Image 1 (tube, helix red, strand yellow):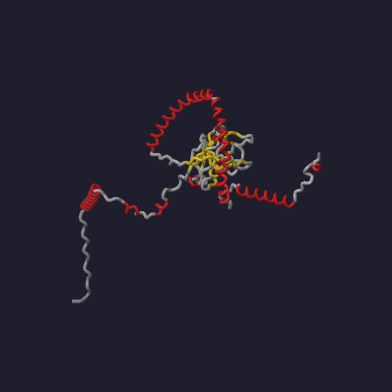
Image 2: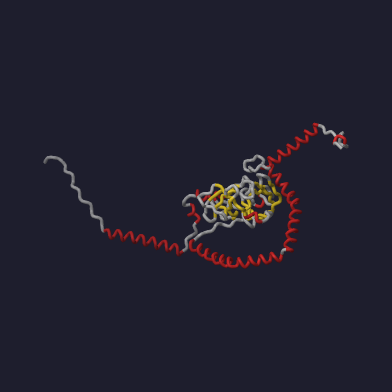
Length: 344
């Protein structure tokens, strides 16, 4: 039976309503595209996007809760059935790691003694904030997550985020209770890195795939397959030494990185509240007068005052002895009296 012979043969949609629905759909799509613009610092819609993310954060957390529950349930059932094999594997790994543990303890002791002898001061500790991923935004060019921790917890734009395996991304937007994390695989992600073996510098560039590229590598042969890639700390955006992944050749011949963070689900992350270690603790102290600290010196103790007086007396005695050794100064030669002209 043809469509025109069915019960819908008299159904007619007015052209005005069709146009109105199309306009509404296009307007909603345009608003979503504007709010999903990744150029956070330069976008004029930062405030509107922060409001949308503030509302979408709790909603995304509610919708993501059943998925997490089912995931934990599946993990529990799988762990119950594979507990014996997992126990055997863990015992083998424990036996292999015991020699490394002893060696690490010995090297830690030696390193601490070297630092004490050389007077090396390590980098200050970085405070952290634990966050949970409540929403996932994926596309051919966009890889971002919404986290349930925001500016109220001290999170700032640019803070790096890590999980138990390595670096995941960085914060590109914050509101009161929600923040947006840009993953390393996003096309807008640029991270300064170094090769652990050769200390060569490079830029880790996301291109939307699961393995970001290594670009601007310095030095021929400085990268080999299997080299560990770490953050270099250049530019002050990330602390030095955060693990990222290992280098591998791509099908196009370029160097890419297999991310450590892909070893597990990115559901919980830790945000490093990192500040550039190159910043001065008290910049205003550079502009203080040279003798301003004299007003804040404590009073001298009696022992210090006696030592200062003794030193002054010694200096005066030494100066007097030097004058005596030099002898008395010779008197000046007499000058002839001027003659006066005249006749007797």
